[in-house]
Structure formats: structure tokens, C-alpha cells
Length: 111
Image (cartoon, rainbow, N blue to C red):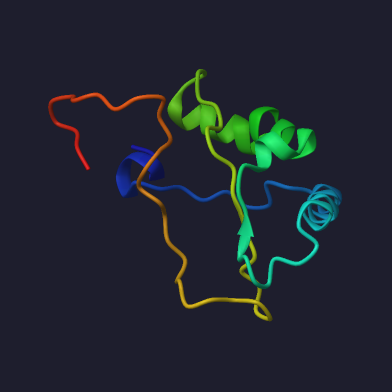
């Protein structure tokens, strides 16, 4: 049994290179030069081809596809400004909702 099956999550060390991190920072600064009041940027995949490419084709995508299957794809990309100098009172957490085209009643699943 792997960590994802056993604990419900898995970690990966160093999935982005320093150059990728620097490019993402530049792109986020271009999209939202000051997120201090807004807290973040929604719909990044629609606003940035570079961010969408990383999410859909980069190592994060490969990890998701390995864990979830080859059809896995990003559905929502939101960037939050959670730095020591610009943090808010929301602790680190995992969202448990997903974006869907329409709601469907499926036995065994619910809010």
C-alpha cells in the first residue's frame, strides 16, 4: 500500500526547479502585483498559459496522473499569498470540494 492509499495524501520533495519557481513568481507578480488586500488570484489557468501548462503538463500533472489516473486534469487553479509577511488567519488546509459542470446525486457521495 502506498502513502496515498494509507494516509489519504502523499508528499513529493522538490517537484519544481528553482527556475520554475522564479518563472511562476514573475508570472504571479504580473497577474497580481499586490495581493495583500485580495489574498490571492482565482482562475489562474484562464489567465496564464504558463501556469496552465505547468498544471496540465508539468511534474505536478504527472504526479496527479500517477495517483488519480491518466485522465486527471486541473479544474481550478487559485494562487494564494500566504507568506510570512502577508499571511492571514486561515491555517493550511486541503479543500474538499471540486468544480463540476453540474450536480448529480450519486449513492455514497454527498456534501
